[in-house]
Length: 227
Image 1 (tube, one colour):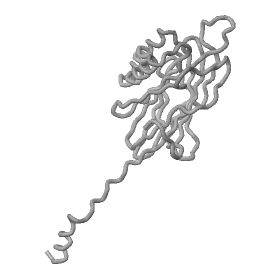
Image 2 (cartoon, helix red, strand yellow; image 1 turned 120 degrees about the vertical axis):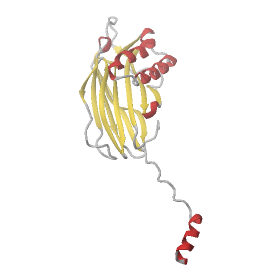
Image 3 (cartoon, one colour; image 1 turned 135 degrees about the vertical axis):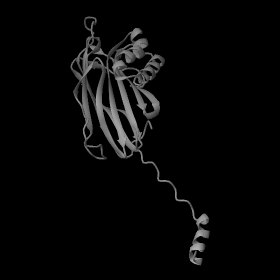
């Protein structure tokens, strides 16, 4: 072997190792764009014209990792018949390449207890590990403690997001219980910073009410939150 080659081989252990490329996470913001009460739940007392909805959310990631949240964090929202509540942030996510995330959103009204709500949200997220045909039954069982305590369940829907080789997509909006998909933001066009958000609408029909819930997803710059 030539002397020059031998000298280079001798230097190799001294050269610094090249760091592995950092995994690039994509920020994604999920927004409750609209919650419209077309018909309030029944039965209700004469003169009772106000409903107090709230959302229990389970974020189920690849590998069965899960986080939960409640909107609002405490108390309830307030809505009258044929009123539409304005947009409000639901959650921020960061998806690494290969991530698959389901966001299960359950809408309820009325009675609420913080500890019971947190436990029910967690149990509802675990229900998505079952086959699709069992989702309705298992989510109903997960929410039973809060409905037995007096809450009324309007319905549940699940949003599927993926990061495929660094590109993030809204893949599906599925009904889980007491709902119908009116429009689905799923498309082959990926989410991109500054692009128009993807959006979908479900009609919730539980407990005698009719609500329209619009979810919106976009990729903003610098979003932070649940990782």
